[in-house]
Image (cartoon, rainbow, N blue to C red; front, side, top):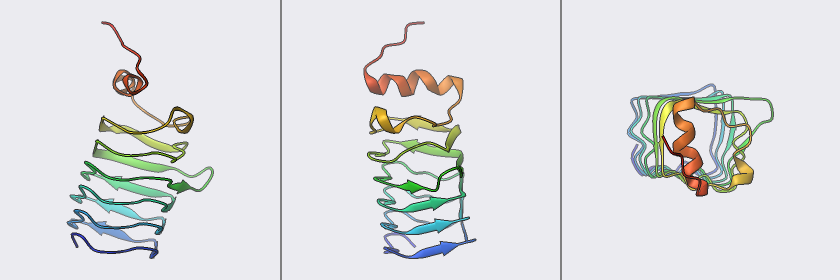
Length: 137
C-alpha cells in the first residue's frame, strides 16, 4: 500500500493493520473510528483530513504531514507507541490529541494550535524547545 492515493476517501470503523503506508496520500480523507496498527507510514500525508475517534498504535509517522487536519470537537485522537519525528502539524488544532505515549521530535506547528494537546511530563521540555524556550537541568 506504499504510495497509494486515498485522496478524498471515506473510512469508517476500519482498521489498517501491518500495512506498509510509506508515502501514502490521505489528503482530504475522512477517518471515523479508524485504527492504524503496526504501520510503517513514513512520509504519509494526512493534509486536510478529518479525524473522529481515531487511534494510531505502534506506527512510524516520521516526516509525516498532518497539515490543516480537522478533529471533531470533544473527540479524541490517540497515538500509542508511535514515532512522531519531523512531523508537520501547521494549521492543525491539537485539542483532543493524546501523544503522551509516543516519541516526539522536531515538530513544525504554531503556538496557537497546541492548546489541549495531551503530553507526558517527559515530553514537555522537547515540545517547549520548539518555541525557543531553553530548559536548564
